[in-house]
Image (cartoon, rainbow, N blue to C red; front, side, top):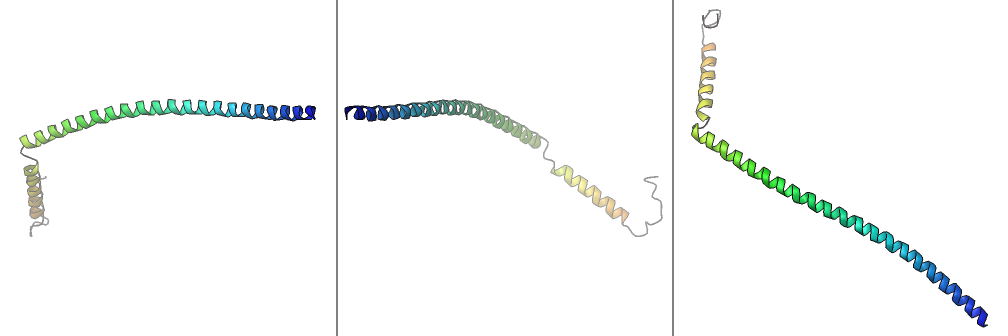
Length: 111
C-alpha cells in the first residue's frame, strides 16, 4: 500500500511539475509580449510628441502668413476696386459689341 501511495504521489508531483513548466513558459511569453507592447507604446508617445511640435510650428507659420496677407490687403486698399474696374471694362466691351448698326462695320480698333 505504501508503494502504491508513493507511486501516486510521484505521479501527482510529476503532473504538477509539468503544469508548472507549462505555466512558466506561458508567463515568459506574456512577459516578452508585454515588453514589446511597452516598447511600441513608448515609440508611439515619442512620435506623437514630435507630431505635436510640428503642428505647433505649422500653426505659428500659418498665423504669421495670415497676418502678412492681411497686412498686404490692408495696405493695397483691397482688391475690390480692381475687380470693379475689370467688371466695368467687360460690361463696356459687351455694350459696344452689342450696339445696333455695328454689324459689318470696321471699328479700326483691332485691325
